[in-house]
Length: 426
Image (cartoon, rainbow, N blue to C red; front, side, top):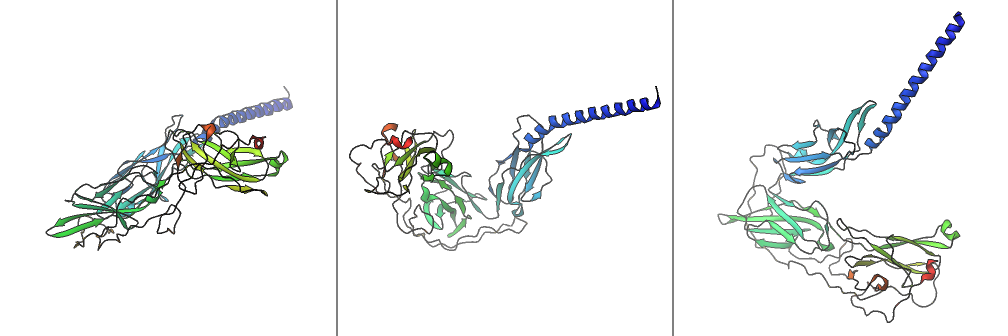
């Protein structure tokens, strides 16, 4: 073989080997890349397994980081308090003998090594740990309560005292007082008026003197199961070309799982357009008029109607609004105004706590005992009860849905029955 031919074959062999190696590497990257991409989309969850979100200094709380990986990959854990990375790498984070400075938002991430480098999960949602250096903590549910629920609260004390009286305050106003050692406080059939800042005060007598400790305020959230819908009318150029308009019924549904489905109804000039739909939107014929929508949970009869919205130029008689019988009554407050007796207070100190803390202070006097009626509207609150939309239960079938005017308390149903305006659906 001549030298030039030998050189040509050597170069060709080297080139083919290089191409083969590149193809192998490319194939391996394609196999690894999808797995790495799916792993980075994982989002861990942090759960309190021992303790509570608000605890006394000196107590212990345990947090667990759960990574839901369907492939069963083994992950290491990274823990953070605010922006600080903690040295712990176990799945469970134990905060022993917690101090005031240890309070804050805790979250975790997952990390594992691969052939192409370290892979990380997304950051979990934070869990807030509040450390209280005082003598009393009001423990409230971590999740919002729903209208009609029973709200259970606990006035927890650092030590066991011979409690004789416990008082519950909302926004600084006394709402409940109970005599005896029971520290459990219960509010039944809560409404939107019950959301706010709550605190508790526990009292007992020592040598003819009364000692009281009070907790810091904690927020209690109360949500409607079904909020009042808001109708949106969309008429973009694409819809105008086909002589249509889009009606969208925006509503917030807070029912606990498994939540029964919602049905949506749309109206024009007080007349229902077609039948109920499980979608919160519908396409109707482009035309002027007064439109509204209703969201209804058929399983419970819970129903809410939106405010009417006018589209285009309307002429003629007054537009009708879906109406029906409504029964509404003012809410009765659980506690009447009462003025607690004046007591002599003693300030307690924590000799056992070695670090600087700011304990909850004993009450010097009692907050104003006047009970103010709160309205459902956002602050500033009125000092009287305001009529607002009431939830009603429809007894008719879906095809004979009663109409409701939610601006009055008692109303006789309109004579006759409205007919469906199906022409607006075509």
